[in-house]
Image (cartoon, rainbow, N blue to C red; front, top):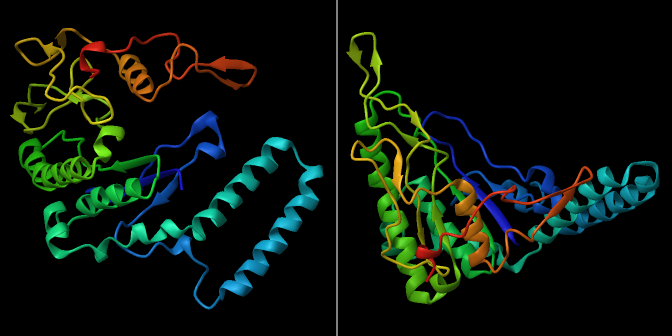
Length: 284
């Protein structure tokens, strides 16, 4: 396994995940819907033995190979990659990482009895097995109303889980080579929203100033870089862009963001487009 996305149901019942886009099927992640519960996609369906299931896979492989010459290479290669990845994952000895319930009760308590807590615990177990990229999602931050109780609820669930994740990775020595990035797509305004003359006690979207925190993987711990104006609305001191953040992450992965390109539709794309500077003060 090399990449997984853990994306639980969020508070408004929707489920979403980030796709690989033009990077293609080989960069798609395995989607984990309910951390801590048996994943129906990691085994053959009930009633199908391994022997019977493997025979079906062999037949499917032969059919795909027979049809490969009649279809565009892009279509067949993507399907073959998806099938190969699925089979490899089903047969992986690392599957026991998904059995988070096998952890000691005190460990489960530290992470919290919640989907996010189990997701963070699963993320740690996957990293220990050598998975290179794990994404944990949590929704419910679009707080246009009742922002204060919502954020308290988020904090009560997320704080202990993330603290336990960092602590465990640090104790095992894995934090030195594992980067944790905690971020959202944008921030919220420092003012509450109004509905007519009545406050909804919510906060609107704000891309002018918001925070990201990072830990491990070459990050200089305890560093605060940049600040907003005194109103908390827009970045003022040492403002950075999302391209700068991406450039920094790639740098810490040993990749020069200005040289890495991916060819798609006849064009060489950079993952930072034509922008981005490494944020040197946060690099250890």
